[in-house]
Image (cartoon, rainbow, N blue to C red; front, side, top):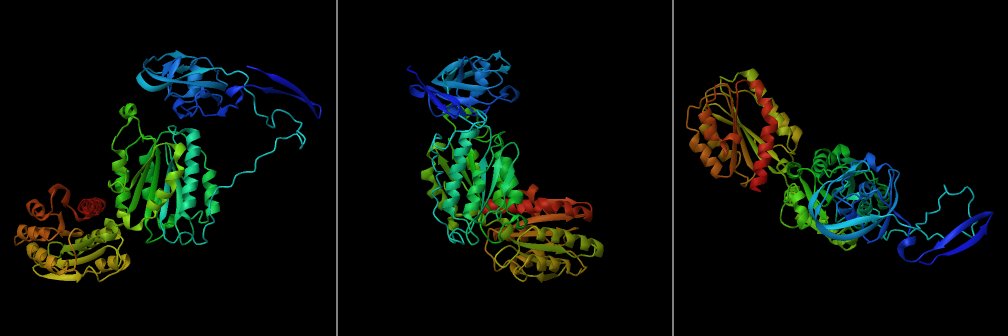
Length: 553
């Protein structure tokens, strides 16, 4: 190695400029305590570890030679190359091997590992120059001696239309990976990708709206759909995001987003398709299935963008190998997208933007909440009584309030029965939720006998005659024994595509209730001794209707 020392005198300050060959003189690349060997691109790269990594939970596998999934800084302390105060270290990449040995050294416990596909070792670099900062001297260089700064490169973003992209009027939640698994370096690459994608989508008042959530130990909403509706502001907000670290709890983030993010109070637009794009590096730490089910039932089209999928030797560490299939809106290939590496994302910006804006392909926009026809068949017999009848109406009003009732949404209708039947109001009489709920509450108590079978036949012929199969539901509420057969009429209704739920109170016989309900009987049959217990069934019934709708459609 040749070294040339040049002495310069500048404003009374002397500098030693060292010229070295190769990469010995490269400025160390700052990393975090959890950056892994696998996260580094070049062999022989010099990294700068922060102080106090012994205070962090770092994963190290091996002794002397470490598996590439190990924390670089943790391994450097374990091997004695660095102390707790951190500093520069050179990472030498090596081939994978068998039987990495675990040991305790310098305050770090490394773990054993049977085999891994790649390794690294660490050495103390020599002649690593430090960058000049304001801390190195109180005397500034004169303007003539300062190296010329390159002008900041402006992002190559085409000027967006004032109103945004009118062909993509979606509400889009971007859930990004901010876990230990991705690390600071790849997190920055992810931000660059999201900036380019957001620029391609072209937000605006009459275009797409974009909000963002970070997935970590706990999800964190960074900004809502209406916080930034101009491209320049949005792109700046994305660039300013801070890395969190923690576990890859993507399921928690999906659940958090599905539950609250798209509400009108948070800026969600009524009637606009809801899209959730989830970015994940590797694989999640938690379960996605229940969260994704809630998202689908809430009309949210979940796309999962998987970057750097697990290698064959990593599959043993993956909790659920089918997590992609379970997370997306529909497992048809459209809603999942694979990017091989964070270093090659640019070419994927346009095709992914096109998918997010494909209105006709967003299959999850139609949900039980805005698509079902629900009929209430209400026992008005003498045994119910006026007071209990009002409790029944409040129970049914609670169910009605759970759905998005409108001309093009869900519909509610009601029939009351004794020996006779009365169509209280049809499925298409009320075009909004408030009118439908008030219509339920205004039903007057009839009083009389109990002919449930005849009432089911009447309802099938009169309430559902203008509807197609697959989204029709009938909830029968009764408190006693029917004077006629219920099995035949119930089977006929189900053959016409009506899913039946039976809700019994007081003296309603379980045999009749199960005979009326659809399969599986246990999940379509409900019973309570007291009318006051009906309210507990509301969330279970609503969830059951949504489950049936999803399975049938």
